[in-house]
Image (cartoon, rainbow, N blue to C red; front, side):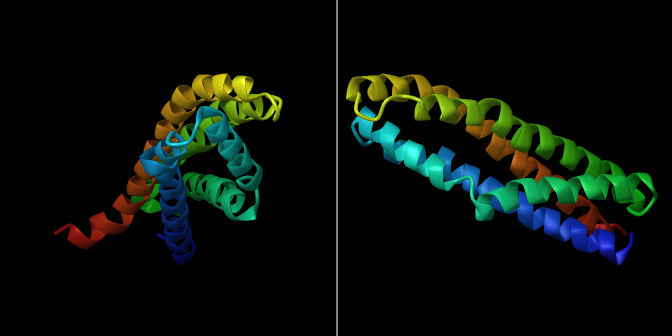
Length: 165
C-alpha cells in the first residue's frame, strides 16, 4: 500500500471517528438534555443547533471525510490499496450511505420541518418537537453506528498486517 493511501486511510479514520463522536453525543446525551426542557423550548434549542451545525467544522468533517473515502475507493480500484481495497470500499459505502445519505435524506428534512414552525406558536413548537424527536433520534443512531462501523473498517487494514504471523 502506498504512503499516500496509508495517510488517506488515517485521515479517514480521524474523520469517521470525529463524525461518529458528534452523532454519539446527540444520541447519548444532547437530545436527552433537550428533553429536560419544556417541549417548545427543546424545539427552539434544536432549531438553534441546526442553524450552527451546517458550518465548516461539521461540514468539513462530514463531507470532507466522504470525499476522502471516495478517493480511497478509486485508489483501491486502480490497485493502490493492495489487500485493503475491500475493507476500505465497505467502510466507504457504509459511511456514505449511513452517515452522509441518512443526514441528507432523513435528518435534514426533519430539521427543515422543525425550522418551518412559527417561532411564536409555542403549542405548534411543542407538537413539532414531539413529532420530530423520535424519528430524528432513530436516524441519528443510524448515522452514529454507520460512522463508527466505517471507522472500525478503516482500522482493520492497518492493524491486520501488524498482528499477522
